[in-house]
Every structure is written in structure tokens, then in C-alpha cells.
Length: 174
Image (cartoon, rainbow, N blue to C red):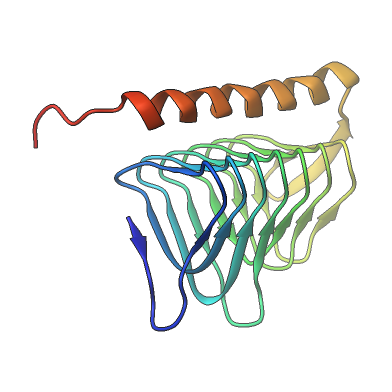
């Protein structure tokens, strides 16, 4: 569902896919061909949430902001299942693994991978191509070229899924 909150209206780029049980609320912008999957909530009630082109926000993820602490998600980003994103910056081509938490003022560098269940604490900044693991999260090593390519393949798979769901999803029973 897409909700206006007061005068804050979500802005949707061309060919955006939002699953029927996802909620996009208030000051949220979704870039062209981005997707928001089942059970995800993007709640732009206190500041702006910006999601770049071709990025995917997977099932049961929560993205929220406090006043003065927006969320910026770049182009070609994958946010995995059941992730919490709060007041941070995720640069282009990054992947945030299932169950990870990324907190206020943190920054994930371009083409980086945050592992499943990692906790990125407030104000942590990670350079490009980092493999980020643990709680609290730390850089383990630089990603290989093959691993960076895999991040792109993940984005491509979600572009294909969105196309399939946009045309083929049908409610059978309620």
C-alpha cells in the first residue's frame, strides 16, 4: 500500500513494483525499476527515504528515519529479507544480507556486502568493496571481482522477479 502522510506523498519512478502487503508511507522516493517486497515497510514520517534506481527492498524489511537523519539507498542495491535500515546511507551496488541492522549515520561503501545478521552500529563508515561481518560489524576483507559481479547478478534477478510479479501475480483467495 502507498500512503500519503499529511502533505508527504511518496514519489515513484517508472516501472516500480510494490508488493500488495508492502507499505510505503510519507516522504519516500523510489527510483525507476526499484522494488519493495512483501511485508516491507518504508516509513518516511520524520525525514526522507530515498531509494535509487533498480534497487530492491526484500520481504519484511523495515526502513525508518528520525528527524534530521534521512536514509539514502543508492542505485542497484539489494536489501535482504528482514533487514532494519535506520537513518543511514547505503552506496550504489551494495548488498545488505538477511537480518542485518544498519543504524543512524552509518555508511556502507559502494559494492560492499554486509553479511547476514550483522550489526552496523551508529556512525560506522565502511569503504567500497568491503566484506562486512559480525556484531558489531567489522571489515573482514575486500571483495573479489567475482563477488562484486555476484552483487550485480542479485540485482538482475530481482529486476526479473519484479517483471514477473507485476504481470503475473493474482489473488486466488482472501
